[in-house]
Structure formats: structure tokens, C-alpha cells
View 1 (tube, one colour):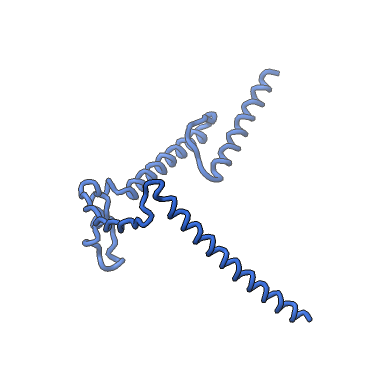
View 2 (tube, one colour; view 1 turned 90 degrees about the vertical axis):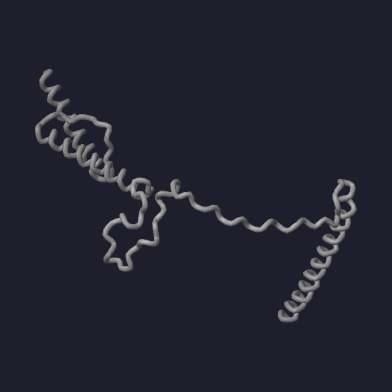
Length: 164
């Protein structure tokens, strides 16, 4: 009984889908007819076919003075063991964006190391902690903040003891 019912449903589903397709095509045909009749009223040709797009333009040549950072592929060594430095491939190393970013990063790291060494030297000399405008990243920052807070609390407690 169930099989017969499902076959019945599938049959009517097929009929319904076919009817929807037919109805959609009729609506599209009527819409096309009405648009074709309305286009001349707008001053347009209903049989207008747009021209094909223009052919693609060839790429513009690269200006060597503005593209100094482009890698020169002609002078690359054949083996990985020959890779010593970037000198043979890059025409102007100071203008290469990656090398410039690397240089700035190394300078920033060197400044951070110098500031850290100065803080450690001041800490060993027994000077009170000073607040600076440098920022440390990672667990060292939290440790240094805890140590600075501990030292400040110690100074406050000593000053409270002196006042009593």
C-alpha cells in the first residue's frame, strides 16, 4: 500500500514540476514580448546587439628605474648550495621591500636588546626602577612588570616605616 502511495506522489510531483517549467517559460515569453514593445517607446532598438568587447591590451613594459626591487632571474645559481647571499639576484638591495623590512626588524631587535641590557645594568647597580617608553613582548613583559610592582611596593613600605 505504501509503495503505491509513493508512486502516486512521485507521479504527481513529476506533473507539478513539468507544469511549473511550462508556466515559467510562458511568463518569460510574455515578459520578453512586453519589453520588446516598450523599448521603442524609450528610444532604443529592440534588436540591438552590443559589439564584441575590445581585444585585451598587452601589458605595459616595466620601467627599470621604478622596479628596482624586482628579482633578476637570469643570474640565479643552479644549486641550493650556491645560495650565499641575495646580492646576485636583487638589482638594488636597499629598495627591496622584504630586505628593507628585515633590516628595520633587526634594528628594532637591536634597540630592544640594548634597552634590556641597560635595564639589567641599572637593576644590578641598585637604582630604583624607571618607567620607560619601551614595550616588551611575551612573558618577559609580565615578569618585569611584577618585579617593578614589587620594588615600588618595597619602596612604599620603607617610606611608611620611616614616617612612623
